[in-house]
Length: 439
Image (spheres, rainbow, N blue to C red):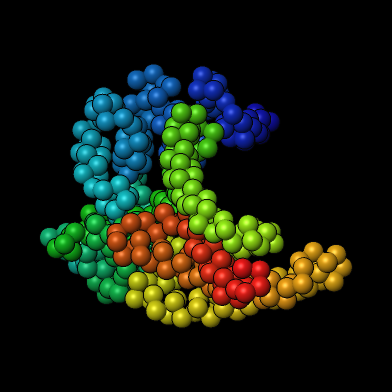
């Protein structure tokens, strides 16, 4: 019954964790038995681990840092203010300190910054029974995973990999070289974390070895590490597409000042950009004064183009993030979106024309030139939706080409861009069709 109560308490603590104060988190954490506390600590996200460790005493903090895998400890240290990092590093034992410092030398978005330098290794000339005995000794140490043993030569170059299943199935008199696989997936230390994530998804692996430029093995990236990275990358992209800076922390843990700072910048840019819409309206105020009916459809026109552009940019940004399309595919995407834009514009334009004709029949709202008004609106929607689709699809490619994050082509930004150009298309079309009648 005691074990069951402890398990229930652990679940309750996990559910309540987001709304607890730092003091309450420490009190709840201290109520867990040591083995439960270690499992619970491992399930926390890195920002939550940092917050908990900051609330603990220096002695407890050092204990928990030392039991963490080196890559996890490095991740925690990276999230600290620079002036606090040396104090935390001083809490580590000498071997762990060397490993963590080596990891901190890599970029945090590179495979070297994600890897764990502790892994199971064997020599290719070992007999199977010797390899299994050596494997048991290593498994008692703090290694990241024992699903695979990596075969290294005398210069620590990676030459193959062998699974536990292969070792157990092989006869004891064979040597590792005879059963190992050499067609393994590996990454360089400087490989971007997004590419590492794609390799995990493509090959369905539990771990991927990391090597340097000479092929020497430096560590492994495991699937649980990359899952966290993929979640963080997806969260950042979604936040950027929504028209804000990446928060970099759970929503409820971001302070009000930081939240305002990350949101106000983009809102100010978008607000100033929208002023161009007012400028464009001023340019066509004479046309609006002579044909007030045109102003009725301004929201319809700019929203159609903005929505089409936002839709296209979101699809292309996600496709680029997943490597479903690359820069070399820009012309294929361009042709595809031209057709899509024309077809979507034709559908929306036809609906707009039908609506005008129906309302004219029922309420006589648009005067004697309603057919030309309907044709103006329909043709404008066709042009604006096509343009919005192309702008939304091409802007992420342009940003990627310039070295920026395509997610910066946020839906609100694309919508604002298309709003201004949509007004130009609308009133230019109106001048051409309605000249001599309403204009």
